[in-house]
Image (cartoon, rainbow, N blue to C red; front, side):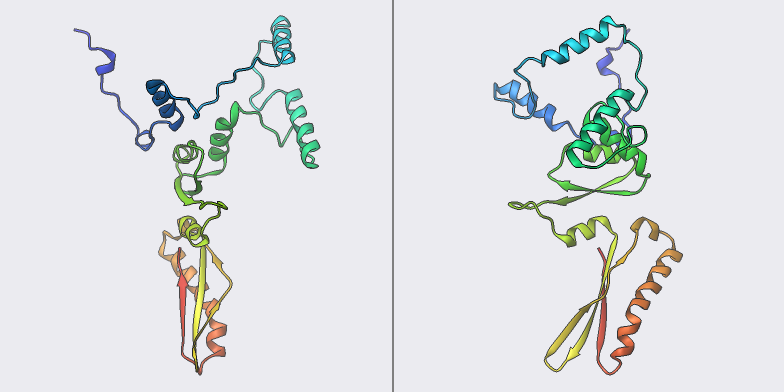
Amino acid sequence: MAIPVGELPLPVSLKARQFSESVIREMTRLAMEHGAVNLAQGFPDFPAPAEVKEAAVAAIRADINQYAITWGARNFRRAIAERFSEATGLAVDPEQQVTVCCGATEAMISSLLAVVNPGEEVVVFEPFYENYGPDAIISGAVPRFVRLEPPDWTFDPAELARASGCVLLPVYLLRKRKGYAAHILPEIRYERAALRSSEARHTLTQEIVRAFETPIRQHLDQWYHFVPIWP
């Protein structure tokens, strides 16, 4: 007896289990279900430019039917480089600095796969385009979310520090006749992922102590306390 395909149990990877339904797809489904105006997806209601159509027809008639090289056709990359230079005043090399992708979605995942190592962390500002989180997960990275607050869409530096785990802000307090005085030392940058070994943590601790050595010696006659503010 044949088992319907839909009833077969399908194994799902750990990465895929972390994904939710696409927001665009969900809103489109709900709009169709309730007869609503779908603002989640763009539907062009105008024809493509005539020159684009003619160029496509000319390419078909000329039998231009081979795959382009993986980083984009040379004349296309040159045109992109020229347009970019005109708009920004920056010169780019179309052979070394321009890559053509099938839309922004492919460009994002390709970039992350090229520069992010498994286990590293990627800071994503909220609200965000829905592919940022899944792209980070597919790359083996861990997304850390930092919220942008309206109306100016700014973020809390402390929240960014906690999310990125890359800044240590040492503060020391001196007791004065009238209260206390706080002094902030230059920040110490570190990579949280690199602190997995006891040797790495010991090295960072030594760096922190060295940062406090000078103020401690200068204020031996005063009560002091140093507070490393860890993200």
